[in-house]
Image (cartoon, rainbow over all chains, first blue to last red; front, side, top):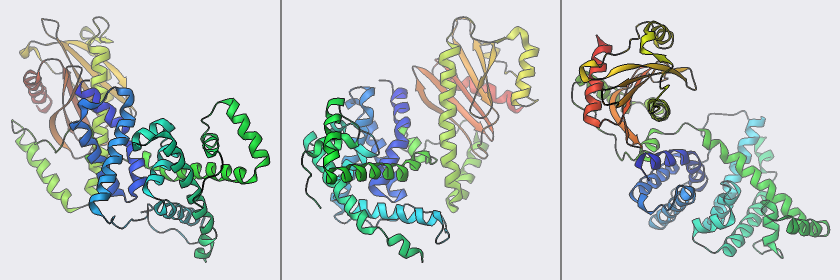
Length: 171
Length: 259
């Protein structure tokens, strides 16, 4: 594959990779650093890409492995900042309620085990097939299904438990 | 909380709409009589929707320059070529120095990088589609110079000219006008005696305001591209000529634009 074709494929994948990285890492700069590492790693391993059709799965796999090895090397993850970085919203406004719901969702995701969070995001947000998501995570499809199910049940329980909190905080 | 519902795989496939109609019908029957499974499916679907709503906007954000560069395989910013463009190099250095001092600059660079990438891709595509066509490469042949010039003036400003490249053995075949997301691009096509073609892709409506640099982009199917941006004006020279020859052509064009 010529370099220019490879470059075009990579450029096309940036938005989706950023979305996945942001959901994993949460903090914007850290997430973009992860995507940049992923793209640089992709260039250094370009010869391993089997065909253009598999590039999406291939890139998610690289990104995920970088993320996991980053966690291992850090032992303790850096403090996570909320996704919302914009200025003030009026307390009680729909925008405020929306922001609180977003924070609640992110806190819930943070509380999941990493492998459950990844399964939820790859299937639910990135729209990968079960087989593809299992390939990215390097696990059998049955294991993926189990993580997906447990992760969804746990996140649901966390969010149900949090219901009402936003209203209290609005006052 | 961490347990598994009976036959949860079928429920997950139902949540994600990834099952055949026979299994779907079975799950629907089960849901009618299994309130726990019913509540779970509804909650899991709502969760998917909420996650997407929350994270999808990331895809629409402006892409940082560092990521576009990394995707193009540029590990670090390439140095500005020293040849001939000393004033350009100086102004770029100044812009960099000013920019490091202020975060506002970064946003501008990020926007500029995605615009630059789109500009280069469009120039290469236009070359692949039109400059390679043996016939009908141009819609305004060079012998309709007045009409070509009138259109160029409209799109690029009254001072627009067709550079003369005879000194390097290229004659103007003509030009065509191409749509861009924001307006119109002009493509001029030249040919040498051996039939080798090069194209100059021009825009005058870029959002770019302060970047001045001159460099090669990633080639596409053996077509090299050399481009430079000067405020809202963008110039991309494409051709399978080899980089040294392309560079000489660019020098000749630049000299005529400046004078």
